[in-house]
Amino acid sequence: MGSKPGKGSYHHGELRESLIAAGLAILEEGGDPSALGLREAARRAGVSAMAPYRHFPDKDALLAAVATVGFERLRAALEAADGGGEGREALYAQGAAYVAFACAQPGLFRLMFGARSGGVRPEALCLASAAAYAVLSERVAALVPAESAAEEALRSWALVHGIASLAIDGMIGEAARTDPQAAAALAERLLRLETLPR
Image 1 (cartoon, one colour):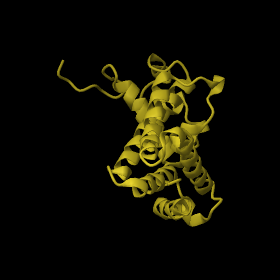
Image 2 (cartoon, rainbow, N blue to C red):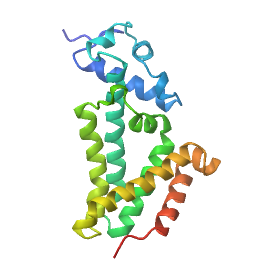
Image 3 (spheres, rainbow, N blue to C red):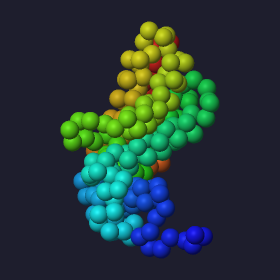
């Protein structure tokens, strides 16, 4: 009692968080989501190859947990960009933040929106994804008639997601792919070309 856990020794819950942090680090270093696995996460966390199975039954469970953190971070970025601002300016700021997030963390972004084997998304991942989308949909709902709010939110999301995907795939120039701020500035210019119904 009172001593710090040694390497490979974790209190309840710490191992799970360490494995998720290892997964995030792999992606932040440019790793491809397909390369993110339990064995490599365990190695980085300094535990045995079998230790992750205490918290994750398989690789997909770890990937879902990492993606959940990604959506939590995206929600926070959208909320910060919106900042309780006014109308369309807040919406444009959200769009720019969405694209900047994708370009700053392309591996994580790809994981978040990638297909799941079996097609089943865990509840925590669904809730985190919905919470991020709600930031956008609530802003759009404040700008358009109620009867068109759902479709306008979907259209707005499709637009920024498309820009983000093109940017991280290098389809709209090297500057947008490698510089999140350049990508965000481009996104904001493109979003201003699009006008919501008045």
